[in-house]
Length: 423
Image 1 (tube, helix red, strand yellow):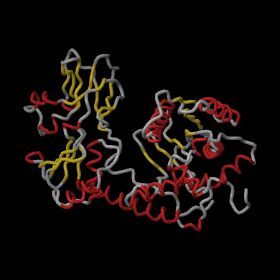
Image 2: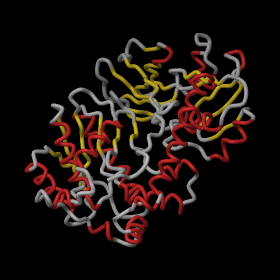
Image 3: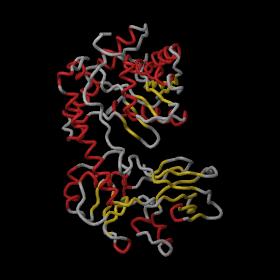
Image 4: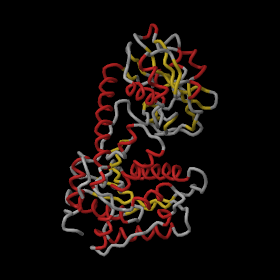
C-alpha cells in the first residue's frame, strides 16, 4: 500500500464515527459477496468491533444464477471462518434469469439480508459500496435523466423499518482493498458477471477504470448535491412537523394553505406506503394550490367537520388484497399486525370496506378513512378491527395494528458521504 495513504483501519474508524452513534458493544452484520471489497470490509469490521467488545456476522448471499456460485459462496464462508468472522450462507432459490434481473436480484438480496439481521437481533448492516461505485451510480442516474436529488449518489446511511444500512467505504478507492488483502495473504472471488459488458454498470466500470482520482471533482460534486439534498429534506421534515398530523389509523390531517412540494411528496409517499416518491409532475402544482385530488394511491379531500384543512388518506381502490394474517405480517405495505397471544390459522387481514357502515355511529372517523382500516376476518366473519377497539368474543385474538410505512414521514434525511475522497 502506498505510504501516501493512511491505514484503511483509520479511514474505516473515522467513517464509522460519522455513521454512528452505535450501541456501546456494537453488533454488526456485513454483506459479503466474496469479492475484494466486501472481504476487506468484513476484516475491517471484525477488527473494529473487537476493539469495542462487539460482534460481527458475515452474510453471504448465493444468487444461484451461475453453476459455480454455490461453490464460491461456500468458499467465501470458509475463508471468513478462517479469519475469525462467523458467516451465514443465504441461498436464493427462486431467482431466475429474465427481464430486470439486476433489480429483482437486488430486491431479493436485501430481503434475505434484512430477515437474517432480524433473526440475529442485529440493527446495522454494512455494505461494501466504494468510491468507484458512487461514480458509476452517478453516471447511471445521469443516463436515466435523474433529477437533482438522484445526483447526490448513494447515501452513507439508509434506515429501513428494522435495519440501518451503513456504507463506510464510500470515500475509499477500490484499488486499496486488493492491496490491503494481498498484503495479508487473503484471497477473494472474482465474479465474472462484473465483466459482462452487456450490463450497464460493468460497461461503465470498464470505461472509467478502477481508480477515481480526487482531481476529477466528482466526489466533491456529489457531496455538494448531497448536502443540498440533506438540507432540503430536513426543511421538509420541519414543515411537516408544523403542518401535518399523522394518525395511527394510517391517514393524515394537513393544515390549510400552500405547502412545499418536497413536504407534500413525503406525505403522499408515507400515507400510500410507497417505496418511491410520486413524480414531481404530480406534486408541484398540487403543492402550490392544495385541493382534492387522487394520486399515487392516495386521496386528498376536504376534512369537513373532522378538522380544518385537508385529509390525506389511502385510496381504497389501490389497497392491497387480503393476505394471510400472522404475527408480524405487514399488509398493504403500511400496517404491521402484532398478535399478543399467537394467531390461529385461517385468518386474513384486509380492508374494512363495506363493513364500515356498521361503525359509523360509534366512530367520528370519516367514511373514506373507515373503509380503509385494516380488519381481521375468519372466513366471512369480521373478527377484529383493532383501531376501533372491536373484537368478537368468538374469534378475537387480541391484536394490534401498527402504522408502519416503508419510510417515515420526516425522514430519515439523506446522509451524504464526507466532503471528498481522501483515501
